[in-house]
Image 1 (cartoon, rainbow, N blue to C red):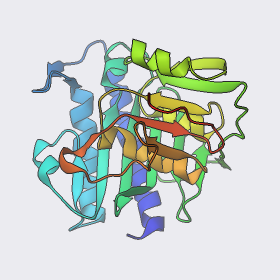
Image 2 (image 1 turned 120 degrees about the vertical axis):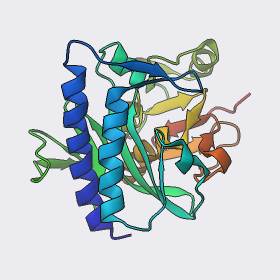
Image 3 (image 1 turned 180 degrees about the horizontal axis):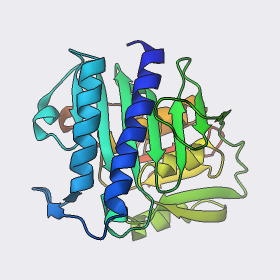
Length: 266
């Protein structure tokens, strides 16, 4: 993979997909369907997926592409692959709460090494550069011309006063019980892969996820966080979260700034 080309192409496609998503988001009404796994899908998911998939296949022919909205791709297997969630946070989109993202990542030998996360309604964009470092770009988010970028870095956490971010739509008693084991200064709720990005910018120190996720939900955010000096580990044994798993399903995990003193799973 040419990392410079990936950064350029993925950024452009994320912005173009974000523009299409916002057209639908700002319309009076949009179609919502239910997939076989009972999760919702909208015309925005499908339109963004078609745009991104076509762009990636044109730019990187022959490279394995796994995308949430194309079930046939879920049986694809490769050591290295592109993985896409064209609209992460569909429930936030449907409720018009703004915390949804476009996610494109490149995985090498089980590790997300490059990625872009774009939150068009929040006007925030995060991506890895060719050298693997992560930046946040500020608007106006022109697809062809990069705007001003700022390098981002995880916090130096204070274990007596941690900042924690947790899911808006998937919070449960088990998550709250685990968070309660830490000395927490403040807590934020956020949707979609934005939670990884809040850890990446130092706005949070810790993001535990004790719930079902798929690799396309997490890969781009994982890459963004890693490029900012952060980590994503399994909840059970604190080993690095790996990708390319059978079925692309994740175990529970924790995203964190190094220096957080992790509590055991039980």
